[in-house]
Length: 326
Image (cartoon, rainbow, N blue to C red; front, side, top):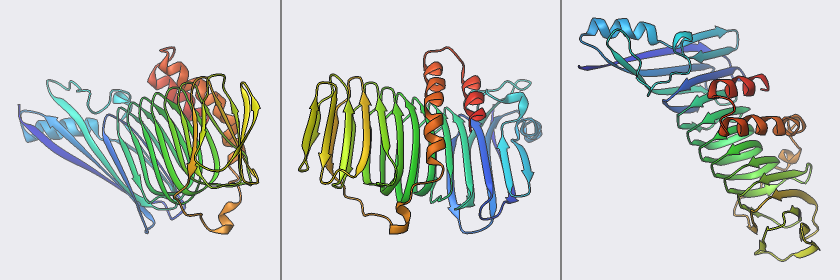
């Protein structure tokens, strides 16, 4: 059976500070920031059919749902196919179809929400608030800035920021690598993945990293106190320091120790080295207003992701619960 390619283009003006949400399954996602006011979404489908006409008929049933309003654009899988995904072939009167990929262009400062399953996500150049929920797929944020909120199950997360960021993350079974000139706020919970953070940490707010079996590598400057709780946690520092306390309650102090970091782990180790990142603008050292609320929600979100990994709830239910907490 021949394969036909069909493309759905969606355009809507949301404004420089508008909101864009995208929810799809099993399709590579590429998001690129622009200087304009409009959001453009291009979804590409591959459809197995006997003719062009049959492919057109199938395409009409597969087109993404679009909800556009003043300053907002929401794109989702059609209700009849939600949760089935692109790479999972759909039987449509003898035809098969696949959502091949989604490309997005949107204003750099827009509020971005992405919810995906079995999909890799790459977002480049965004500086507004970004919320990504991913199950079984890698997430890459490039040339980023602003408030970042990430939930990830069975996937690695890579952050390369060029402006100060506030990062809240819950991760189950995957590694995190984050680089930024300044972290205004850092709140990370990881079950079975390593955490690597490179950048200056603002002294205006406390930071916390919790792991079950993952190591924590912190590359930052002096003036940090890391409170470590972990019976089998080894501590290493390439910088001049002093180590206080004993057993499962120790403190690693560098310089004046003004910046507070808490590291809690069952069996993960801590390593501290010098940061290679440049600090952000002085005015960016003020803590993000969203940091307290993000920290308050972190435990609940971690419970949801843990329940998903244990098989107590399915992907749709996890996404629903996470969405309720957004």
